[in-house]
Length: 196
Image 1 (cartoon, rainbow, N blue to C red):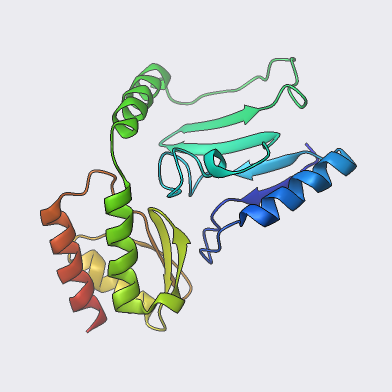
Image 2 (image 1 turned 90 degrees about the vertical axis):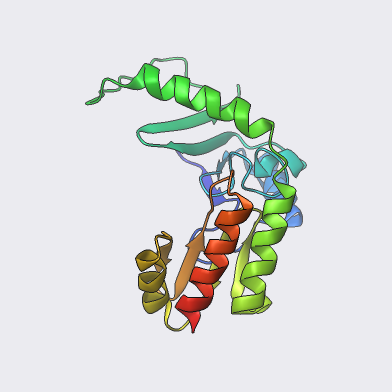
């Protein structure tokens, strides 16, 4: 497929696609006819800070939205304009599709019941206080923090039972949506020790 592929929240840098940039891309798409493909891998499922999807708060639709739900479940949502009715042939090496679908449906229902704003505000404040606001990117519940000793910090967090992804000097933070107050306090202690 030919299209312009963009991420709502960039995984490596934490840069967030602005509403103005998205509107300009939509205008460009309308002029050229080239479809816009939006990746909601980092921002979907309530992590965007603006709704269930980043696109929920945007003016203008994507032609294609891609989202990885975890495990072996990926989703591609397409507009009628770019839909191809010819069925795709997919080969699965795993027989858990119905289990994955049921799990995902339950998670969608459960996630829509959560008020994620307090958790998002906590994560923002916690990371900004420890890394400095200028070193933290991302939005909502997907954050990227830069640190010159990111490998050491990642190792210390792993030793404390906290898993974060590291890409160079960037650490990705995407906490569980159901993080308890006790878990938040434990995370803060582990992060303080890792940064000491």
